[in-house]
Image (tube, rainbow over all chains, first blue to last red; front, side, top):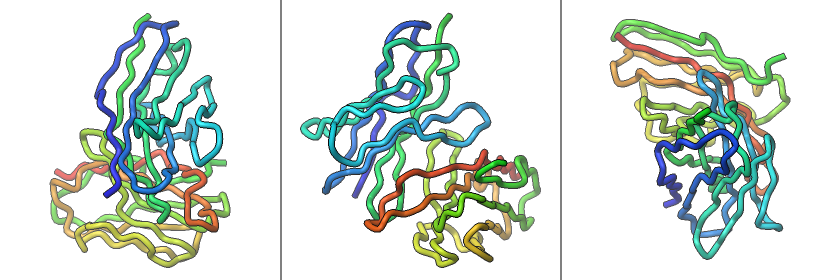
Length: 112
Length: 116
């Protein structure tokens, strides 16, 4: 069965520091991978997605993610975090049946 | 205009009551979803409709009944509410590609249901 694991429940970084949020997936075929962000009291917004091609994908708000098939990972990165990036981040895989399977989420806190 | 709107935003009710949550999307998408987010922020799909037809029905109690009067609307009716139904319910929509993949899901802002 498909699954997505986000090992870190909560991460705190200082403003201006770099960020990496981890995501591992379990899926038999080529996965369609996504990162979503959820601000408090809001729905989810798509940051970026990977379907095929270049394994380094760029998203909105300065985020990027790299697909590594050998490690079954799709980690999210940002070179310099802003206070407004504090939110919950979800990694997800599409099972090509139209169903998104989400990880448990990583809560990001940003220190001044 | 809000792309995916759901009402109400907050819903507080007693155990045993019946309640509905409404969802509308103005994006012209042909697929709509209901997701449940529990207290630990875990998101799980409940239902998916494509052009008013049910295509995904996860293991959800039959007290939950989705209804899609047209492809722009997907409502969720819950009978005999229980304490464990307390959660945030998100509506979403997307346009499935020919291969069945989600290009992108657009989410509503959620309905926080509290059952007392």
